[in-house]
Image 1 (cartoon, protein in one colour):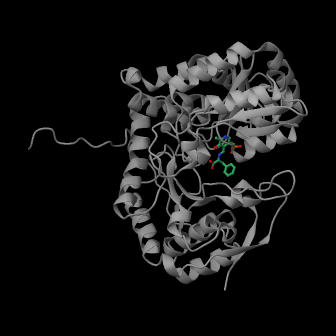
Image 2: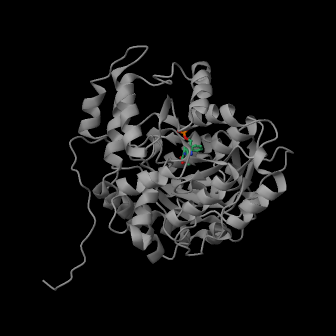
Image 3: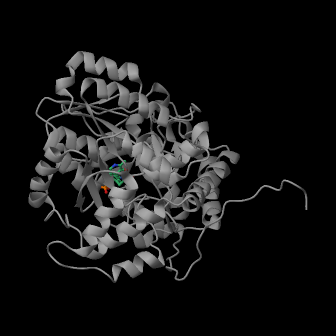
Length: 461
Ligand code: P71
């Protein structure tokens, strides 16, 4: 064997049980996507072969997590599993006070209500749909302060999740620090394509906000994936473990919201955390209105146990390097086929640039929505629109027109194989070969909030 043979990433687990899938043909898929109003959210999961709608709540739990489910202490108050979860969060992330919630948006609701006042401003490194909506419903306006590179799918900046401190400073000068209850910092910025923020940038944001008495609230939904990129790309961290890096990230922030359905390898669950007693007190009061008692927050004891174990598993270097290795495998495969994807390859999926893929469609003809429907038709692979439909409307009723018009191929954790990745890449390539013939869509039904979930479309003639 030659010296210096490249060593592949591979999964640090093996399979004990499999879930059988239904295979469909094109006429069946055409019927299904028409019935779903060309919206992949409205497909029945049974009609999907490889489901890349989201990495949220779709991970495979480990044997240990399933064993943990059997140890659920289903008491109304003070469940043993809550104390285990609280301890794991305190030890792994370093936050002092913890409130479980049914999922991420439950935490966002409570945190936003607890610390936002009407007329406040929340700067952040790009919006996320539910996060921004909860900020707005609590009376704040969200202002994007991410670096410009994040809006350019071809820019190779290694940390496209970084905050532009100039933009942040402008917001603070314009509105005054008093009107800014916190800066919202997401690790692995979802809407930018799963792009990380660097430790260096986070430290700078910390120094800037500390001077002005502004909090940092951390959307830590995919913090372990971000930590992996810091380990790979920021020299001084290449000998540190993902676990150590995660803890350091959290140490520069004052509190967090988390959807544990992603990094933390559970099918349901989330939490909010804070280092401030007064914020905790307010949030603990609110949680009983919206979620449940502060020692279960809408979760069963077994869910909290699975989360506690999932958090520990998510911080293993072997786990995270195989997870991101698989995403990168798919990304390289697509690039080899010439598919325009967001670069660098992100942490939780491949984001195809629908504007570049279907340049003959205007943004009003929903290129990303169209492409998601076409990929489903081709192979039964389900993806998600992340463009003008997802961006929704401003408070004045006008559409947001985001620069990024993307289709997200999100990879669930520990679920699919390398052969599945091959099938996915071959499918998008087959759609690519006939891209010139693809027609756009028109929206025929639009719900008021988070319209992408339930909107319906028809094909343009
Ligand atoms: C994703 C999701 C799930 C989702 C949410 C909204 C529209 C479509 C799909 C959820 C996140 C997230 C970040 C960074 C908060 C939430 C909300 N992502 N922050 O990517 O990515 O968490 O779903 O548990 O309520 O498919 P929640």
